[in-house]
Structure formats: C-alpha cells, structure tokens
Length: 132
Ligand SMILES: Nc1ncnc2c1ncn2[C@@H]1O[C@H](COP(=O)(O)OP(=O)(O)O)[C@@H](O)[C@H]1O
Ligand SMILES: [Mg+2]
Image 1 (spheres, rainbow, N blue to C red):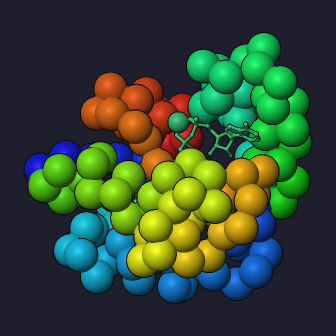
Image 2 (image 1 turned 180 degrees about the vertical axis):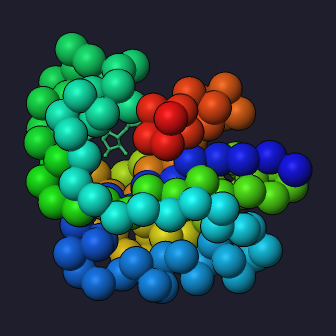
C-alpha cells in the first residue's frame, strides 16, 4: 500500500475533465483518499516545483498552475506512485502514448493536464505541502 499526490491542473479543470480523469485513476483500482478543489497560492506552487526554480520555463509554470482552480488529491494503492505516473504518461503530451491521460487530453507541454509525484519520497513531500 502506497500513497501518491496527484493534481489536475487548471487547464483540465477549466475544460470540465475532472470526472473523466478521476475515473481513470479509480478504474485501475487506485483509491482517492483526499480531494480538494482550489486555486494554489504562489508559495504552494513554488514549494511543489522547487526543483525547477531557475529553469527557463519556471515562471510560466508557476503562472500556469496558479491561473485557476486545481484539484489536488491523495491517491493510494499498491505501487500507487508508479501506476499513477504510468496512467499520466510522458511529460509532453505530444510524446505521451494514446491511452494515457496526457496523451488523450493534452496537446502541449505548457498545459499538460495533470501532475503526479515521481517517487515515494516526492509523494511524502508533496502530500505534506498540499495537505499538511
Ligand atoms: N520545457 C518545458 N516547457 C514548459 N513547461 C515545462 C517544460 N518542462 C516541464 N514543464 C512543466 O513543468 C512540469 C514539471 O516538469 P517535470 O517534473 O519535468 O515533468 P513531470 O510533470 O512529468 O514530472 C511539467 O509537468 C510541465 O507542466
Ligand atoms: Mg516532475
């Protein structure tokens, strides 16, 4: 049993994709333990993406993820971190396989639909950033 952090990004919330994306997670048997809708404070977005600070896309990324409501979730199940990343697909929707969330619902890297923790350690860190 493992927990991961998943966030449906503002573009996907605005497009009304929340139900379909949550269904993808539930269909494989992952369990939604917590779920909240709201717009991120800049400090929260900065904490989540601290590893990218200073990169050319960083300011755009922070502006994007704080541009409207997101849905943040704690998701659990055996191997939840890797399973969620597999369902989410490659970072750039242009490279993400059909059948993945980014492959099916995204077009461009700057609005790539969803975030998922990349390791168990990241999951612990991100869950504490978003849920205390
Ligand atoms: N070159 C880029 N241009 C614009 N946005 C980017 C770029 N690289 C990454 N991003 C954004 O930053 C987020 C975090 O990047 P990264 O951790 O590499 O990917 P992932 O979300 O798949 O773990 C991506 O999901 C995407 O929204
Ligand atoms: Mg990442």
